[in-house]
Image (cartoon, rainbow, N blue to C red; front, side, top):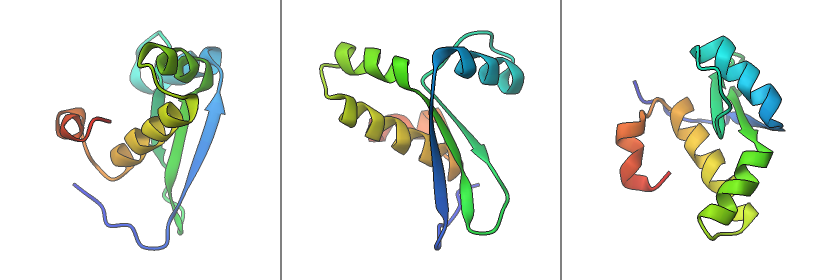
Length: 96
C-alpha cells in the first residue's frame, strides 16, 4: 500500500559493505552486501530509515558514469520509494 507523507522525516545512514551485508543477511536472508536498504520505524514524525553502502555507491557512480552525489541521491530516492510502499517493478519506470 502506498503511503502519503505529511511532515515526516527520513533518516539516511551511510555505512560500509560489511555492515550492509550483515543487515541484508539478518533482514532479507541474503548473505551479500547491497546498495540500499529501507526500514520503517513506526515512530511519529519519522517515515523510516534508509541505509546506503557508501563504498557500493562510489563503485556504482563510476560504473554509471555519474557523480557520487548523483548516485547517492538516486539511492536515497530508491530507499524512500520503498518506504512509501513501491516495489521494484513499479520503480523501474522512474529510473531508481
